[in-house]
Image 1: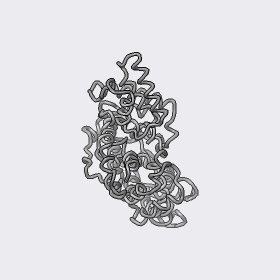
Image 2: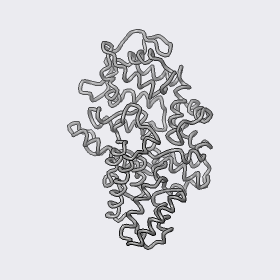
Image 3: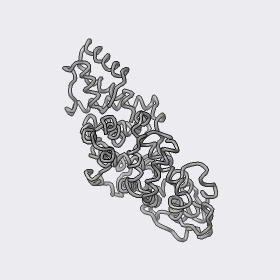
Image 4: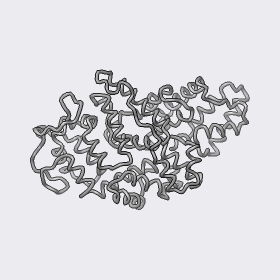
Length: 429
């Protein structure tokens, strides 16, 4: 693996570029490099922040503590690909802190995504389906034979298992919703319970098969039997879009989906197929993604050695449109152009300025005043994990330093680093 490939692999499986990890990966075979970045044994076991399970606590404050905890884990964990995958599944199986009854329900879902990130998609889907956070968010806690609620049945098929389109009918949605009646929460909305008295025991026709379906049976039928290939292609395409670039060709999906199917819906096999694929290292893939606000803010914090408890990136990412643990809707967060807005740009500028001053006050920033102009720009490039700078960006940064030095250099480092965080290259994942 050459250096360009090593940089790309490390960047896409983390939050910014860890140059030490790049050095480890460079020169390895592609297979060995992928094994290295997907080895999570060096990551510390997750420990819930104090108060997470205090059901008498103030929910929004508890969730805020969880936000800081998770953003810090993204920033500091040795193998960040684990958290990158948790972020993906957090959006795929979207829920919201606004609808949970207790903060620990958010924590539990986060651990499910972490535990299953390289496991079985079927197991993750089944576990997520019975999550109190999911049952509350999509109203299935209200779903009873006497009062059918179709929210969860619809999103299960369209968003979690098969994708929108022609692969299921409106009848499938209605009948799936009937199959999920009685899969509710207890009276205080603390935990999942199955209320047999609320379950529709009648015959239901789903995917053309008529029987007395249960809710979990619908998931198994979709991922293992009648819609096995459809579901597999949907999940493979979506994960590829998150890691490489959106809308992969049918040929790319064909090549990455087979290992997933051959290994009993193994997400480890799928992610490995993606990271080993020649197309993953193509020019299109290297330039194919805009960083989400979370990815950008964590990368900036990491580059400046600022823990989340001090940099408070959750404030900034919320202003940019991506609030941790508060999905915007059941489809989760979109990609790329949705993050390129004037509102996000102003929020990034505010966060960059706040972050650099906090880093300076902590002694985390090296002064560039005694460096030559090209060296100052190169130092900042490396500090923020920018593998390349366009001629235009490099010239703009160098012109700034020349102009600053002509008038005084008191703010040179602050402004140069702020400009680097706002540079186009820093916005690209």
